Image 1: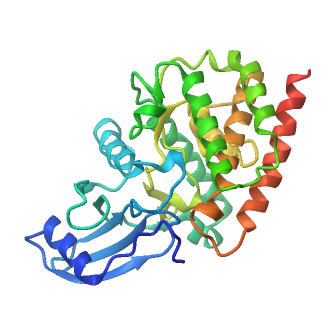
Image 2 (image 1 turned 60 degrees about the vertical axis):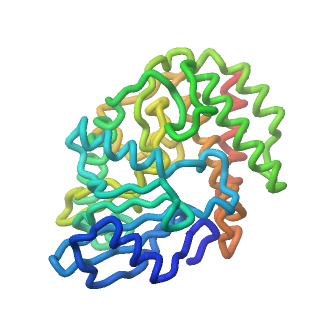
Length: 322
């Protein structure tokens, strides 16, 4: 799919990028990878037998959602940090160029990892293997979340950073509402009602005092597996410093008991369940807008997201009246 955010480059430009990053290697083959939805990616094979993945950020002229600004910087910085501080398997960053001199956008190369995405292999795996993979994903996710910082927010956006989690998260919510308003996207819930509810719920965020690294995109498509084990986690572009309950594995509508067991969580307090609902809502508002910002061929993702969004907002309001 040629989504709007995919910054397609000519063969001559791609050759320049490859030669600039690897002057000592000779390219043997180059082809586009099509599983991703945001950045364009290519697999590069070299005559020495090595393989790299090239990712190129969207063209600066393309309008992206607020949280997506400078997320390649966030991705590279987060990958390097995780590689330094953990034993979580992930691709090694080989070369990063944010100068925009050889092409219109930042780009980077990373080593290709073994395996294939869980989403592409799931139907071929036994249920015991799938359970084991989710258990491992939970354990690895917990290790990522142990990395801490002194400020909350998106690494590549100073305007969405701060020392108070509630203030940062409120700014994130407002930015998503502004994105929807800009493109006249109906989120099927009341923006003013949502913000009023957020004010009432300020207290449930007070216990989040330490900014922790959140991958925020560990779903089947970003878990690479081989022989029933995880070979690597990919797509670190959505990383931010926040509350670990933002992680995909904690979404109330998609929780896996095996993931929770691997993470070491047996249950949630009422306050934690309310925060989980807020993070559901934040993600679903984003998902409801992707078909416009990326120019998907259909609005199917919008209808799925808004149906869930309506349910989760109603659940949140109902909890507040107890």
